[in-house]
Length: 624
Image 1 (tube, rainbow, N blue to C red):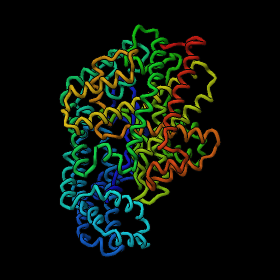
Image 2: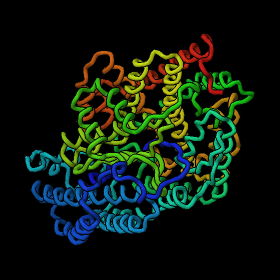
Image 3: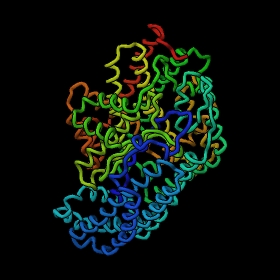
């Protein structure tokens, strides 16, 4: 059935920052790295597992032609396939994390490449299973489901049967399995180009120190109070992307074409429907999100006007929209202190939650903390059924938002921890739609905790501005990205050409709408659409916006009532239900516009509060 083999890597918004020089991987202190020995004690153990999987995966062929004979025969193939999936998951987690440490490491690249090839062979070998299950007559299938031997498989079998109209015959499924490495090649091209091959040079900060410009340090530099530093970083960063614009545009076009091909091959009406169908998320949820956010763009434009006024700028450029508005708040928070701050914010969830997380971040080394040369940019959580839910960070003590990134990734990891300790292997995989709820829930609790602790007016202004920017980035920005994915996929489906210029034109229209007339859109920013990693995993980003909307409703309930049962029910549910149903059980109706509107209401309230703090009472230590 293969769905259970999906690794729990949750790639997230970057937790970026900057350092003057980058260490090589061998220079990083062991205490600052993750401990991967719970997956495999060493590379040799990985190789042994890989060899064993290579020699036994084709054993699934002996079950072919037996699945319709009895419930026991069907259970036998499912259990065998699960054994392959569990082994694949462990191998993939170890290989993926090792490669993330340094994308130029030859041994890691070799390991990852060999596993990719083996996974393609396993996918091919198992490609007949789903079609053969779908061929079981309805009456026979219904009778099988009443047999206790299939008791642990009712949920995945029900979901598989739902895919019956979109499952092809054995030969076609085999061809699609063989094609997947080719169809996904654009993602690897993008990753290698942007994380390894591209070099951005250095930027002098306001003290004259040369800062190496990387995808991680870029965001840190955009938060510097000196406008000339931000402008220089912006210009130099996009100069490198401009030099590779045609390659990147070709790669993005290939990704979109692959999405559309697979959707048509499986008889979906669109690539977007194909992406939303497995989670049983109505397309209306996606469209309603865009409509709701579009209707509230004036308050976003009002916030940009506030920024220009506080900074006292003749015009506001996009590179001016990330710097903190309150210069008195300068971040110098160690990783250990940040961990303690996050744990303090999460106390409303109880000691079990915080004890498990604290032990993982401190003693058990779940987290790879700092940037090194060749390390994957941004942040992610990667959890599996048999190993810790690891966190990759590129933590910078001078980037206050990295504390939020840590809280965010901790939400993912604890979601995985509770799901795997509650559900069976085949039911513990929660969909991304739910993952973004747990992560943003933690960020909301962190904001409320910090606001409750401070009496300093400047700090309060900073924290409110931080939440505004979080909502701007997660609700407004990700919805803009979602709209870009919708428009570009519809263009391909209508027969329009996907070119560099078509991408720039589409993205420029969205930039103009979402930033409004009060922000100058530099032409280089049109290239931003070529550097967003999520665009190579289309129809993912809207889940950030729906996730934060659901999280705001859930967090509000926990903080106001102290009742956590429904939230822990959500964490423990894993993938045992469709996401809309899971959230409904937790008290959030995503078929209704109420959660999105609640998030937009919070944004508007925070903007009004910030206006009062910064303008009506006098600007507290404005950053510029």
